[in-house]
Amino acid sequence: MILADKIIRLRKRNGWSQEELAAKMNVSRQAVSKWEAAQTTPDLEKILQLGNLFGVTTDYLLKDEMEDEEFTDETDIPVKRITLSQADHFLKWRKSASVKIAVATFLCVIAVIPLLLLGAVSEVALSISENVAGGIGLVSLFVFVAVAVAIFLHCGFKNAPYDFIDKEPFETEYGVTGMVKERQKEYRPVYVRSNMIATGICILSPVPLLVGAFTENEFLIVIMLAITLLLAGIGAGIFIIAGVRWASMQKLLKEGEYTPQEIRKSYIKETIATAYWLSATAIYLVWSFLTNAWETTWIVWPVAGVLFAGVMAICRLFTDKKD
Image 1 (tube, one colour):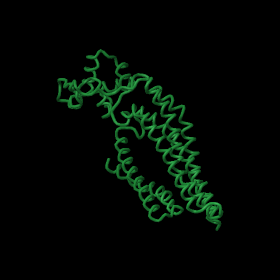
Image 2 (cartoon, one colour):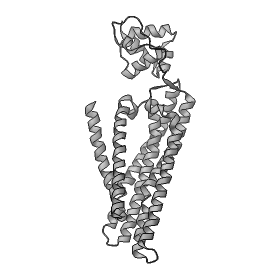
Image 3 (cartoon, helix red, strand yellow):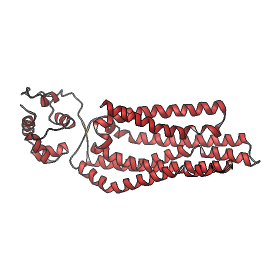
Image 4 (cartoon, helix red, strand yellow):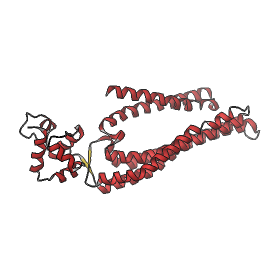
């Protein structure tokens, strides 16, 4: 018995019409009709969803020689279902979280600015010593980072009820897909515009530093560097606000980077990215504390940022080749 006949049998056994099965599978009635007419075959994700929905094994669905249903163990953990209200709450929370995450990232980027400025001021003003300037600058750096970490932890705690969306298979109830697609359609122009603006800001961010490089005034160079960091932080924040909101919709729709295949790739990339930035942080702190040259060791971050793009490109090539 082929898959098409099995879908018909199981659908009728449950007393569902093609429209009802389509709603439960988040597909069109025409898609179900084509499955049952053997005109098309569901992809692997949909076959797994059919197995969970009907309570049968994927072996039964995929193997033509198996005529009798092979039911799954009743003790299996059911796939979580996201209701319309849950999806709405998730999208609203991620919209709020996008701003908080952007602020935390901005604080991390600009955290070194007070240290740089105070160090420059101590060189031109006699009213503040280099040691005092360095001490105040370090305190402000750790305060900025501490506030950023607190925001990240808060967002992680608030997002805990929805962690399963990233880690476990889930289904959406009738109406969720349509609602999310409608919001995605409305948000798309804002998403595109935000990415264009953020890209422009990030490309232009080194300009002040390049301008400062043509002068021998060290204080002016530091000012230009601070402006560069501010612009970079603003650009990163805009990217994050737009990206987090867009990603929340893609997660519910299982599109883009959130298909099962791409989620596996993302896990690899996130692991590498985490190890990379932890290593960069360790290098920065060890170098800074050993040499006490805080006015110089900041160079670790722009260099790490440039190299990070290359590391991610290599990682992407590796995961694509593996697939």
